[in-house]
Length: 196
Ligand code: 5GP
Image (tube, rainbow, N blue to C red; front, top):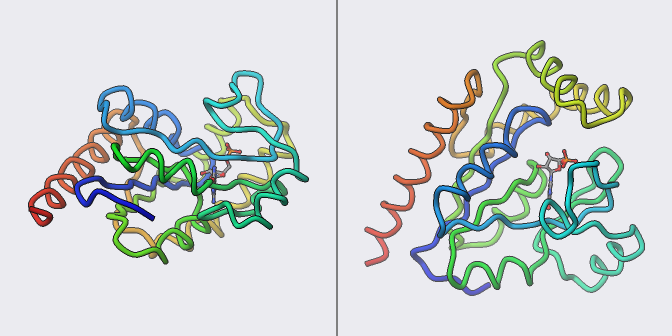
């Protein structure tokens, strides 16, 4: 994997419903240099999702072909669907940009095996489980069965906090965003200093 040593790769992981997507989009809007890595998935699009923007929505057959061709840096089966990051997507973006990944702990572990990526790994957690349930229900994006599955995955997800460089609690979206912004800006500064 090629990389310009001044760029960073920020991984934002969280249990479903902890506010990660909003934060990811906010960072990209404010900082032009940051691009979001758009994953491939076999999950059905939600009504508000756009193909090529939120995800590349593909069939299971196509996804398995891409796995066989070793085209992913990482992929995982989550809630019965595949999600993965294509090598091509990342290599093209990383030539000129910092990248934000919205991926789970399995993908984080796989990306961590590559050296010299300047990874900054951030785990966002909701203040408590009740709040998580409220948020999952309020965003009204998934069927009741899906909400239940996502809620139940929480205990397993948080077990992996130790794989991350930073843990941020999203009690208040604005404060959480500010904390993540500070982490990213100081990581970027450190990397620029050490790569001169
Ligand atoms: P959702 O279905 O809510 O969009 O995403 C479900 C989970 O899949 C989230 O935790 C999200 O971070 C994760 N995810 C999305 N894209 C990828 C990917 O490319 N790789 C991995 N490993 N996880 C992903």
